[in-house]
Image (tube, rainbow, N blue to C red):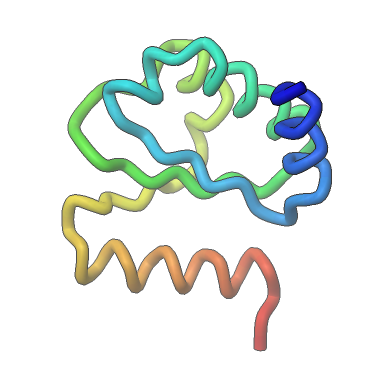
Length: 91
């Protein structure tokens, strides 16, 4: 059952990376998964691939989280590494 696999993965994760695109913002499954991650108090790192607006349900969940603009590969990659290092407290 893929839903159980996803729930188990979110439960075990220290960080959830949300990849924002036109397709992911239109997916009810992505909206549910992100909502579950928020309820589980997971650190969420939003990565924006295109200029698609967040779905309203997603905006409510991650409105106060800084996003990484990955259209700028050089700075986006560095910001992702920095965010993961901080979130995972890697030294």
